[in-house]
Image (cartoon, rainbow, N blue to C red; front, side):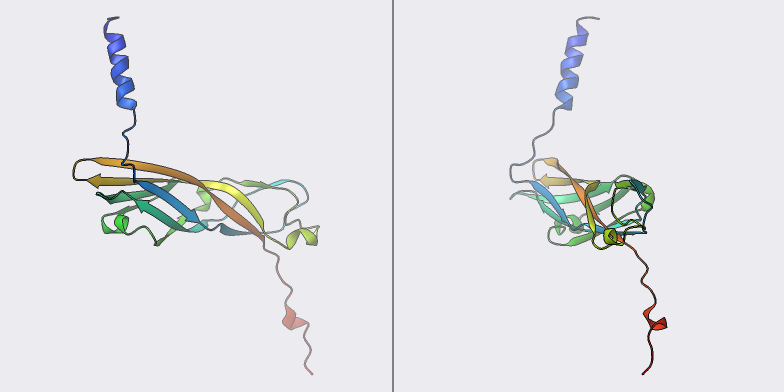
Amino acid sequence: MFLRAPSFLALAITAALPVAAEPGARLGIEAQPAVAKIRPLAQGRRLVQLPSLEYQLAIDTHCGESAVAQSVSISVNDTQVMLDGDHAASAAGEAVGFTIPASQVAPVAVDGFCMAEDPGSQQSGLLIRGTVTVHLSLRCKSESQEWITYASRGLDVTLLCDVAKPDQSATATDR
């Protein structure tokens, strides 16, 4: 029994080693921050539940000179989009719409932004970096092998203070 344990351990370690991707394979992503409007908050630091977040993802895929993209998987929390076949091969250069439901976005802490008692705090947006993390995988295939390249990146959110503007038509006078 003791003689089998080291050989089993060596087999388990070998099976867990990653398979090297082709040197020319790459997977990247760019995205502008999502915009989320929030209502003015009471004084002090507050947790704010964000609405659904919408992103346009620019995905850069390249499998190398002798391979083609078979699929691209994009996921954030429980939301996933799979591009396969021709869509995976043409993913580079095309924007992919991606919406994350509000129920899958954790609340964010804000302090001193969009305060109901301080109109000066309501003027500009607040950028929150890495609010959610997007995970990508690119499956490539050549004549002799298949491999997967992974990437992940934090996606940003810009908070805007949603202050109701007074109705100007009520104060206008006819001349």
